[in-house]
Length: 616
Image: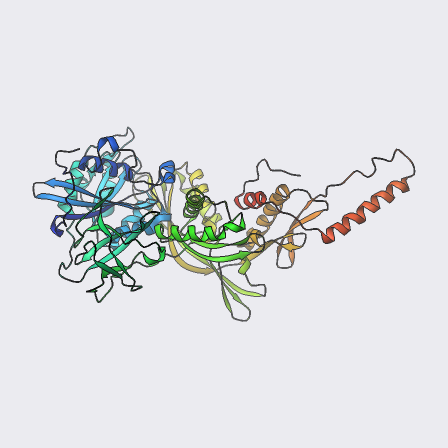
């Protein structure tokens, strides 16, 4: 702890001039959480004996993967020659899939620390978050982290940073989140450079909800940023969108554990507890005001994020459907970008069609559902939204291949994204080849420094949601970084490939693909299912079809009893008679029999995990 840290935090409201609200923005794995740990230690809000690495990452999944998924707000005291200041810091995620968390955090701040790894330099997500911060008119403090690493080149990357945001390389602070070197100077710079929040202390109370979590014992805990007026414990508050009124049971700040205070005033960031258990009562972006003397106008709020990837989530046990609905309701509270609606599948029963911001987002949500709520789930192959126009002029929005119209299709539009890829110059050729194979159109190419290049492409979203990122990393030995944003839609020659088992469509395996790749998808899926589905008493054809045209076929051979085992010679006609009798029996069985597809085969076929399951 620094001698300039103050403990304990003052429970009284802090005047706006003594407040500094900031967040840390950076690419994934550039040391945000480690720098936050050092700040907590130096300011003394976490005692040395309680300290642990990634202190603000509360979820097991965050600690295991070493990534931040959820933004965390924390308040720290810091003394300078000008007095004592309260620093409200929000630690934000770094991955492209959690940009909505970052954008909400930026709206609650006046400044941002732009953190860059001194050994790796600027990455794609750093640029994306920087542009978000500039759009919000935030004061940017450039910082180089990990300067204690042997591979660090602070002078080179300080020049790159200064060139990017306009400034002098000497103004770029150099710190080490691991050792604590330079962190005190950074805290001083925050106090000096970041402006104090502004608001009308005498106006009716207005507080913006920027986050919320569900607590099993206390109900919904709502995180707010005060804009105008003051909120105090035990007063009655009102949500401006729903007009719902609640009693304020507790109000306080996170430091980093909850500390009840006598209220929150202009510019402060804190939490509210009303005892409400209904998760729909606390909507991110809503404005909270005083019930007795309400504000006339709500705050601007946030634009709702558009899901980029859709996937069906189904419980393996159909009786878990109600639990899955409740679990999604609770997750929606802590992850405002999650969207879902009920759907049914012939093969999988009742479930939900969920919209995600990306593949990592999908993976994290399904893992959280399994861990936190103990649910066994199947997720269908990810897909994107298509606009299909039929010959009759009707337009159908398709989020699931089963919604694809059966009639003649005049035109199909697919979503397009603008992709930014940052990579060393040595890999430009291989990455351009990869992008062109995914129907990418080159928009431009910029050299950020002598050996770092930014490639900008327009690409169909459907081409990058599966395994594009994995291929990009393997082709550049892990050096490339990717960021993307929506860029409208385009018409394309897309078709729906159906998978038929014994002539019956299985909707879970259908997919919408480009016509050039339809044959490859059909042969891959039929081959995969042949290995996964156990042999039946009769022969089962597996077919891939576009409309009525079969493009690929595999057969699962029937299990046959050796009916000739008892024939020790004799006339051939006797053997033929036994074989014909068996053949007739198989034909009758095929007419009434149904193909049983085990759950493991569904999971493996949709995830691509067929190794070791060859059942030929």
